[in-house]
Length: 240
Image (cartoon, rainbow, N blue to C red; front, top):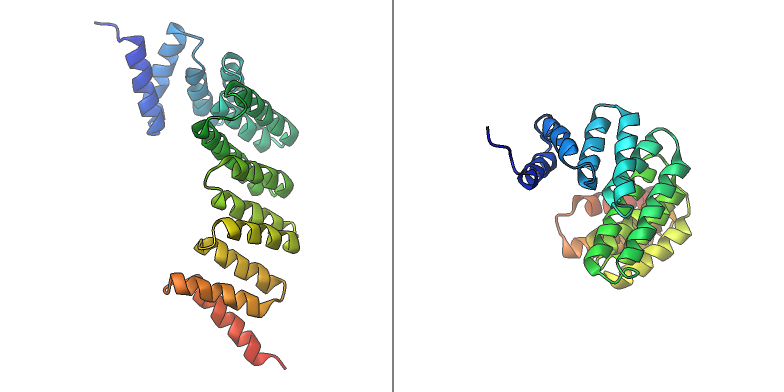
């Protein structure tokens, strides 16, 4: 029987892995490990498979091995960070990602490549989402802000940063951040909705209504804006 070309095997394994066919890819990864133990992507895929099976020690070993080979491998650093956070080892998770991020910036001439910047921004978002899930809102905020700084389209990251501030009850600061984002993206419906909600929470009801009306001017069928306005008007009518 003819032996499969290692590069063809690797490309096939990546395709199955990206499609989520982990049972198919597992023996392929084992074969690739025998052929070449210096491919960081193979160790990353192995770590992901171990993580899916709940074999966290083996997953940690595989992700660490990937990072030993390529210290700038962001996907491996994210995988390792996720496990550390699942285990409650938050400071270790943060350190792993920040070290990989610093090395990646150095490798790409201090962040001059827009494509690389967007990829790093996405990784900061993933880590921010993870911190937000675990209610570590300050760390989430830090990562969403970094993502916003790196991206050419920062509004979605800014919205997540604003949500982190709101979770910390920092409404005035959230308002300042939202107003700054509005200057960059004045017609973003999600941002206008958020500004309305913040003004409502700060008891600026007229200003809140103004933002929701702006949403409806752009999107007449927006049910969220309609519901907010209806609720706001009902409160006005029942006030003494």
